[in-house]
Image (cartoon, rainbow, N blue to C red):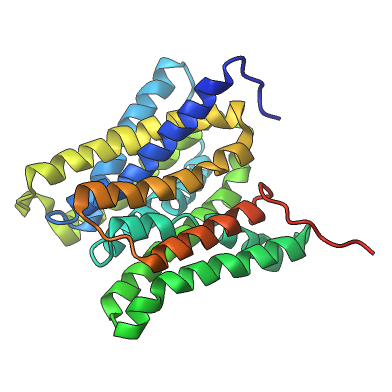
Length: 301
């Protein structure tokens, strides 16, 4: 159960701030990917974030795990939660706008429902949630219609990559249940450290970062991603999980998608198409339904 806060307006303000940090990450990625390959963006972001989080772990006197089995579990979590989705999003934004990427990345709850329903066999409120999933993927399809009509293969692949990141986030959320008895800051720091350990050699081998000539905007974007959209966002996130609860924090996905579209339009000159607006509305209605924040009345006999 979430803890009651005597300053509810502060918690709401922090939720908006968290949504801004995560929504702004798509804008920062779009700037960075112009002159830095995806693997290098991700490895830089993860190393900065992991360093900050592990410093906080040490300052709080939290002991690091000693078991190789624990570190292996953190490696899996880090891959699912950070390394893989960050890379897919960064690659996807080479081919699509940041606002569209943020919109498509609001769909992890839909994948989480499909996994728990078909694989884990959890059927609670199945009809309502299944209807929400259909609406959500209908919204995704609407955003893809223009590129389908134009046969824009690269854009479609970019959108598919971002949707793949949503699937990875959903699997990560389910896998993370095994860490429920451990300090959240420890889980975040250790999993991010292992994700950085995975991505650094990939970056060195395939991108050869020492030979790159990134723009100053790209460098600052990667630093901002690591400090604000990764480390600071995780700190705010875990506070809000304690005060608002997991479902309450989920509502931030609506704001996050909105911020990504708005920031992309304001700072990058991206176009907000009618299809994106319709898709945005349908996806948000879908996520609200699947997470139980919106309950449609059902007839009872």
